[in-house]
Image: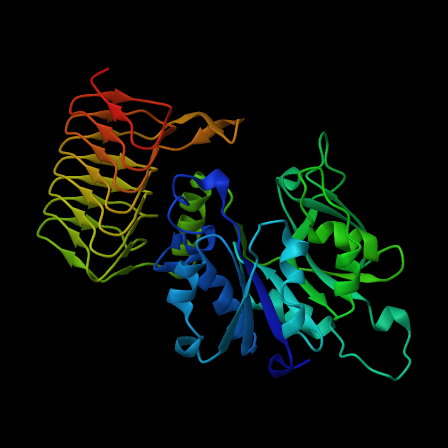
Length: 401
């Protein structure tokens, strides 16, 4: 099918609770990756595949998305919005677009970066609705992109018979039955809405697309499209660092801002045109410095993401860290790299390489040390000369210790 005949539905309603505090004020799809939001990378892949009409399913902090993308004119496409008032799962999200659909359509997760080739592969397999009888194998009820992962237990593991999907097991415990996972790109016909209405709730009370696809398998055919290109997932704060680094490695960086005398800035970084890097500062590969951010003299920034309007003062050392919007890192603060256990949503992740995450408007006083794996909420104040570790709630004042 040609891109002009298809609508792409992109799911962008989720909050991203495991990414707090970064998602306290912005939806997960608007987290910055390089020089653009995560969601814009997904939209770019869809546009490159030739699709000109997109429906964005929005919910949590939706104004951020709608203000940024508008009606799609900046991308020479048409964007329509469907609102998921309650985040009740991906199948429930797709159900919100039924009024906008009158033919075959694509569904993509708005938080996974892919190449346009996967979109094109699914498009090629998605046949238009036809009154002419053809064999079921030639006209499957749904298409699902699949890819390989070294951590399949974190995703939906897909069982295949040739290229036919025979089942999906969400986040299996124990040894995974395979490394083939759901890539999060689907091709559906309008009949999928009837299957969604019959989808059972998951244990956490949500209606999920993999459950819908499993239900579809009892009476229909789902074809798997194998994909081995770029597939980058942002589910945890440290994923933001990994994905940023991979994109910069693949696409190279751009130093557009002010770089003062003696500063050493890697080619594999992004420095916004409104950002300033001070004298004799070192900016290592895998780093992004966003709009209006200021890095003082003699600082060292390595493999870190610096959000808009953040400030890192003279002599600070910041490694493997995320510095939130309008956050301030004082003179000679040290945030070293290291591996630690990080607890998110009451689940412990072990052996994670992470310096620190600083929420929006957080201030770390001069001479402080922020230990590896620390997550400081929004509007935290750390007194000068303090040592801080672990998770610190929004609005907390940390004194010496």
